[in-house]
Image (tube, rainbow, N blue to C red; front, side, top):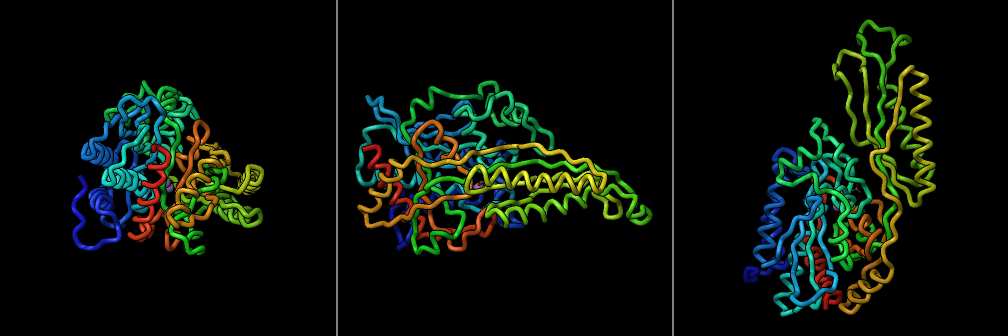
Length: 416
Ligand code: GLV
Ligand code: MN
Ligand code: MN
């Protein structure tokens, strides 16, 4: 049972207690950011937290074959497919507290609200926590939902390695999950009728519109490319500039080319991760490896933006006698969320006096991957600064409370 209300607080009591209990897990004391990478000790603590939260609510927990966690509010005698909700608990390096966890905590809190109101669902309700949504450890975003739906084949996934060379199967085994079982799970998909993910907004649109909540319209197509620039290590003091094969030069030109291409095409292009080898202050690098993330409003613009950046990377590499290779690490096509489900959410919220504008987003989500197999929808909660993937990410308690109330209303409508 949720704790009694106590002093006035804008967040529902079930939400506040759960939120507080999750906050310390995987937080770096230096930066205040979260480092919850899949199958690491922080992730295993998040999994234990999920199971405890479910147990506390008498929900049946069940990890699936791909390491995603599920908590079921079963309805004896109902064979109807479930209304699923939830999000993810993993983070980017030094991520914020809300991206992912807000959806999982709100899902449990919404169930508390429904139980307190005496609601008896006519079909099961499931809370999910998808694994490796950020691709923060193994490089493929939404890995858990991609495996579940068959958007990535199990052999490719078993070949993934993290930055230290640990293979996904070894990481899964260390976390108590059998990697031999991964892959498309039609039995589980057949048990799901729809998926509604609540998520912090990762931009400032709701703040600009003066709305606490929004409904997702679609997700921009997006992808990640790994760029390897191979040159020749040399002495920083004695190697003549004209003789150098310095991979840092075409790399730097590529960063600027990415910015130019994104500006010209109204896209987003980011290089947020780079390594330089051997990494001596007094030596020309032998190799630079960079990760390019590109997103755009449509597939054609995305393709053109990537082509423009890779062409510039190739030209600058040739001009510096550096060898550049590129490889796509993950790709997510454009997603349009189910219009009927979105309209239904809007109607449920409107009936409660909540005006939730419809928004596109450049951020990726498991709901986007699941959209290929079942009706999915997303509710966004206002983020006052719009900052995300950063310790500065924030949502006000009052808006989180509105999110829980809205999600409870949606679950009541869909599962009633
Ligand atoms: C995840 O948040 C992404 O958009 O990459
Ligand atoms: Mn994210
Ligand atoms: Mn997320």
